Image (cartoon, rainbow, N blue to C red; front, side):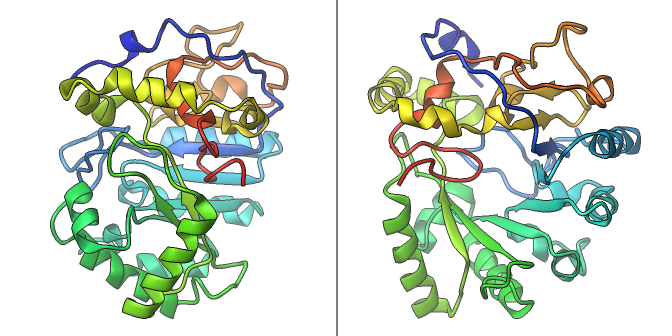
Amino acid sequence: MHATLPYLVDTDFPQLQRRGVATLQVNLGYLCNQTCVHCHVNAGPNRSEVMDRETVDDLLAFMDAGAITTLDLTGGAPELNPHFRELVAAARARGIHVVDRCNLTVLEEADQAGLAEFLAEHQVEVVASLPCYQEANVDSQRGSGVFEASIRALQRLNRLGYGQGDGNRVLTLVYNPLGPNLPPDQNQLEAAYRQHLDRDFGIAFDRLFTIANMPIQRFGSMLISHGQFDEYMALLKDAHSDANLAGVMCRDLLSVDWRGYVYDCDFNQMLDLPMQDPSAERPHIRDLVGADLAGRPVVVRDHCYGCTAGQGSSCGGALAG
């Protein structure tokens, strides 16, 4: 796989500073039951990196000492971490909103019995990847049979009360482009998703996020292999909007990898660009318990244009519109 960081280092992206930390986004490991061509984590069934119990305890200590309002769990498939359910239950007991970034098919894994019911019981927001409402497009990106399994999982979540307007069981779908293009208008695409999923499968959901593909890891390597990297970067830079800088996720979010090391965002984590800290070259979450991170500079490189192009893109979808 081609390394993408050397293509991103010489950057003119605007400097940013943190406002603080409201969201703790945690990568529980790179183990996944899928292998997707757009995956910026390079996750898959053969990855063995998963967060251990000691690091989970470090996360809880950080939450106890700070003002975290949201715990955002990602991977890989975060549910495959053996401590996933324990961490979710502990965060919910502390009154923290929990987001599970779910690939949907994990709900059908034989060793994940009762997972959907667990999420509903603990009022976990499910942010579910569904890159299209058409089978051929989904399977081409995520693997044969993924679309059908995803539809079954969504119908199961609907039966458990997700997607029905209940603020305690929010179902959010995520779209990302199939290739080196910017996402379309989020509101218009959401309307199309609603029409097709309701008409064809009787599926309801609460909202749709559109997220741009980042030119890093597996997707970035594919761009390099196809000779499209420079063209895609030019697309992102030409579509940059200063108005999106106020809403980028790195200003209020802290990203933690499976070992407990800390980054300004999930994308920096995948590029191995640690958060700047005066006390450590590579800060660990246990070193930041009780720390005030407001005003600290955010580490930026050229991939950051992926968050400010067009409508803007973050883990919470479009930033404008």
